Image 1 (tube, rainbow, N blue to C red):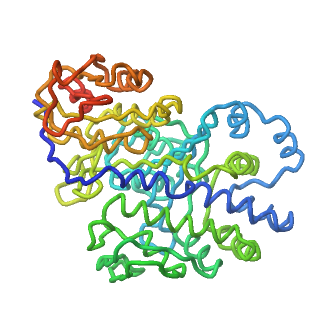
Image 2 (image 1 turned 90 degrees about the vertical axis):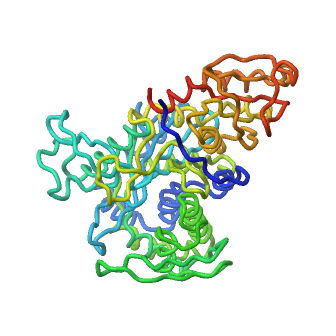
Image 3 (image 1 turned 90 degrees about the horizontal axis):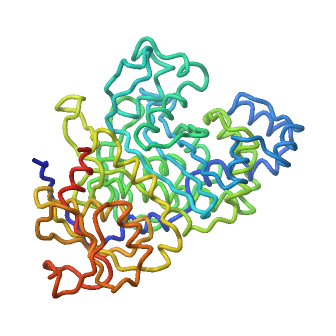
Length: 482
């Protein structure tokens, strides 16, 4: 018997669409900023920065060789030869917080040079995983995924595997655990603490950010293991570093639009866009020394200068429309959820935690691995609607629509259908959209059926044009990991 899921309230499927079209990925605001401002600095100053953040000096001869013909396996080589690049971005509290190595922000970035697109996937800090960072690797430790990075730097577990120790141990551990969830193998990681974020905004003399609603949070963490209230009005305003950090970090806003995963992601994206915009102006370049100083002591990465330059060269002219932003979420009534639920899945009854609907993560792997839909398929602009035929899995249609909304498919609001043991793709178009029908069949399984209102009577609210995917009991089982 499948677990029944409450149907989440939804108006139109445009929340994640706005996020996908909002701004360049955070990698543009972090890596590109470093490379851009470095162009105005002396070699010695930039070498100091690279040494502090990566642990290695710049090798001028090596950089020239890499630029001419990069070595196989490097980021430059992959981008040059059309191979995907995966980078893990981590944001943590730093020394001013009581848990300095917990990563409050976890984002997986995939660069796809064959289609000139970038995926930015947000992984929630409260996602519970069974970590295998110890030796032997059969030993598991149940915790939130944001604890992976702190393993080498604390004594929270014993017998840490040697590969997760040393200066890059935290990044390697986070890559391993996020890789299990997403199915991605990461090439490099970047970790930035809140001090760098705040100081970077201050070095730019603040940034201008617009809020869609008020933001009132009475449980914002202060610097003394307690809480303090923060209040921001709707509209555009100038923020200093501390204020920008508050807007980005707030997790308990009274306004539902601001407290949801989508609301936090939108605010963070807007702030990063403001930073990027100001840093790349003439006045921003004049602040290059201050920017480098703000980042130098509070950013850590295993990227080389060649890696940074390769990413910059590839993405410097990338339009905002090439960024696909997704987030793993649980249903909350605002923005809806997709592949996660909220219940006690190992951390105790009084701990905030998120749990994968599919404990094997196979559905998340399939989702992330399918996010770059072929442009020719998207070019058909086929009207697509999802109908829930697994009537003992309420809300499956909403979850699937939320998942696939950022891909660029033309999605209508979902509906409930008559019970269907098997998934069926009803083609009311007379075969006008063959590529889209094939993609849907590959993702969902089932058969494509030539449909008319007469031989396939519509459910209430169902369209009778384009393609309608009736999600059957078979897909619901796969969605749950069965």
